[in-house]
Amino acid sequence: MQRRTRNLSLILVLSLMLVAPVLGNPNGPPWDAGGGNLVIDTGCTCHGGGAPSTEVVVSVSGVPRAYNVSETYTFTISLQHASNNGGGFLFWDEGIGTLAPGEGSQSVDDEPGALSQSEPGNDWVVEWTAPSEDMGPANFKLVGNAVNGDGLPNEDDKWNILTFTISAPGATEIATTEDVSLRTISVGDYDSLFVAEEDPEAIEAERQEGIAHEFFANGNLYYWTTLSLIIVAAVIQGEFYERRFGGGPPHLDKSLAVPQGLRRGVLAAGLAVLFAYLVDDGQPWGYALVAGMLTLWAIYGVYRTIVQARAPKQYLDLV
Image (cartoon, rainbow, N blue to C red; front, top):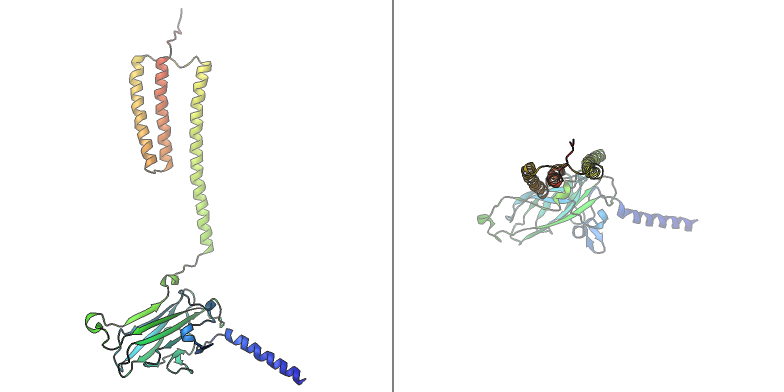
C-alpha cells in the first residue's frame, strides 16, 4: 500500500513538472530559462512557437541618446500587436544603473536590478537612474510578450526582443551637433499591426458583382460579334443568290461609277484608319467593332461599284 502511494506521488510530481512550463506567468516571467540560459537573453520560448515574432512591436519611449550621471529618466514600455492588446515584459540594464518599477510592474526576485510586470497590462511607466559616475555605455535588454488572454502559452502569443544602448556622458557630440530630445526605440514590423479583417459577406458580394460584370461584358461581346457575323453572312448570301438566280449585279454607267467609287474609297480609307487607331490605342472593344463593321461596309460599297461598272448592259425593254 505504501509502495502504491509512493508511485502515485511520484507520478503526480512528474505531472506537475510537465505541466508547469506550459502555464502562463501573469505575475511576471521567470528569470532563469533553464540550461544555464536567461529569459532576458533567449526570450519567452514557451510562447509563440518558441521564436521571436516581428508581429509584435516592442518599444521604449523617453530614452536619451546619452545619459547624465545620477539623472533619473522615465521610460514607457509598450507592446503593439494586431489582435493581442496586452501582455508582459522583462527589462534589464545589466546592472549599470538603477531601475525602479511603477504601476503594474515589479522587481524580479532572482535579479532585483531587473523589472517585469506584476500583472498583465501594457504601457508600463518605469524609471531608470543613471550611475553616479561615468560607467561607459549602458546596454539594455527588453523582452515583450503580447498574449491573447487565455492564460496559457501557445502559438497565439507573440513576443519579441529589443536591445539598445545609451551612450556614456561626453562619448558623443550630440549635445552640440544633434537633437538632444528623448527618443522612442522599437523593434518589429509596424505593417503587421494593420491587418484588416475581411468580411465574408463583403467578399461574397464583391465576387457576385465581378461575375455579373463579367457576364454583362462577355454577353455584349458575344451578342454584337454574333450579329456582325450574321450581317456579313447575309451579304455574302445575297451576292451568291444574285449571281446564281438574278443574273448578276445590275450595270452602272462609268460616268456614275467613277465618282461613286471615289467617294466610297475615301470613306473606306478613313474608316480603316479610325479602326486601326482604336485597336492600337486600346479603346473599348465596342468602338473598334463598330468602326470595323463600318469599314467593311465601305469596302463592300467600293466592291459593288466596281462589279456594277463591269457588268454588261442589259436591255430589258424590248419591242
